[in-house]
Image (tube, rainbow over all chains, first blue to last red; front, side):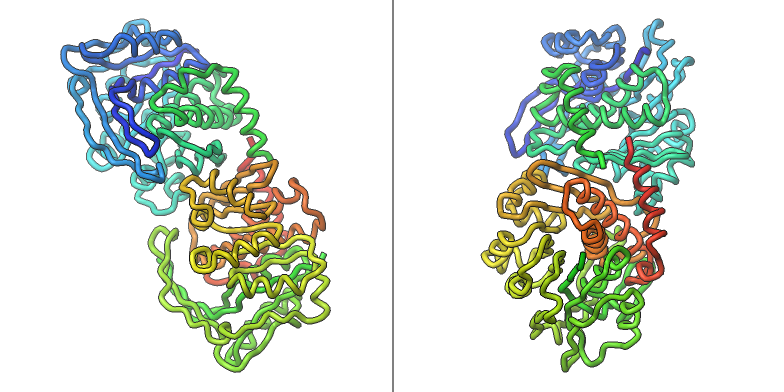
Length: 299
Length: 299
């Protein structure tokens, strides 16, 4: 099945205890589509500026990611810069320059409209809604958001939650959205806001599925060394949606397996700076680690 | 198989966002033996003062916990008082009165010496060693410790680690002991210090097994409400060791199943103040929740 992502393409500058990297390829749509393209064709909608290096586009093209929806706007590309703390679980954002992202209008190419599987990466709920309205044939839409929208644009976000099939957020965001201290209570409350499926990402502690009938939890893939956590969540979403789009059906067993592939994609993503490791691997590497992981979680 | 625990019997005063309880039955040996006695006969070694209420002893006796090793010393019983924060993951210790615990000498009754399964609850490594030396026939010994001993009595603790089969600590303690920020790196390093098995408790995030050949991780049992986390770790150890003692063999499949029963015991323990919920349940309630949990973690 065809899979569409609307998200950011960025130039990231990252410092971690293992080193630093300047103006490397980043952004939610980048991590998502590199992970998802290991399973499925991916259509990418986003914007870059005139300064965006051609070599970064080549990376996406080697994975046959469809860039017909990638806009090139006058101005500079979106830039993000951050520094991770020693424990890798917290980070400071040092700088955010929206640049061409400020006026981004997610206008989909005509032939993207029949897309069935859709990932709306973190963005303003208003702009996410604009995308949704161009997708009459969507079968499964997964939404990402963040604390900023939860507090500053709550009504629009709640409207979005009534329109999508799934929500993917981290544990803090889930608790904020629900106004609950307990994650299980928060998850159950969010299901009553609309989405049939809620995936909560807990970083090194794994991920949690809430749905009407089934709860499911898995640990993270155990890594002795995390070099750069940037993009882990979007890589997870990419593995998750890529697997679902390939499967073509959204059943509970498929969702569980998709969570494992999300976990595996994220585990590769954090092993090197930027999306480098995601670019290196093939489907075989993913499947090998999938087998290891199944052993790791089997009673 | 016979199972021995050496630990504390306490009078706890606890405040949580759900209320408070004053001078209720507490202590590591209490939680451990109440959980373990759902699987196996338990021999308890500890000390109480002359002020210890008879009704608390009755609670232990209803589970046929062997109290021949319980000493009654002149003086007041060990008291602990703490307050949990809103998120239930952190707490402040308000008061600790060691009282009769200060001079506790873990002298085992003669007929306890052939004990095969042994849990050494958190205590000074010196006193833990004294116990160990009285147990020539031990088959599987699990050790608990805490940050205080890791920093203040490290050489003695390291000596203990060379003598026991398993260590059970929380994630912070594991990182402290190993001097590592990454839990996986920490766990692998601790295995090189002696124990064949390391169980890391991560509270609401579940638990992790490190051993030479196998790693295994499970989430916590999902609860919408945690009323009092006191004793959760010792209840986990009780479910774990109780199951192993009943199984009579320490294989990887048995250890994994023991972790699940530890998880289940802990999940009941936190549902009410003190060990009240552990006292209410029977083996059937544990088995029902075990089945639920297996569904919850099954791919």
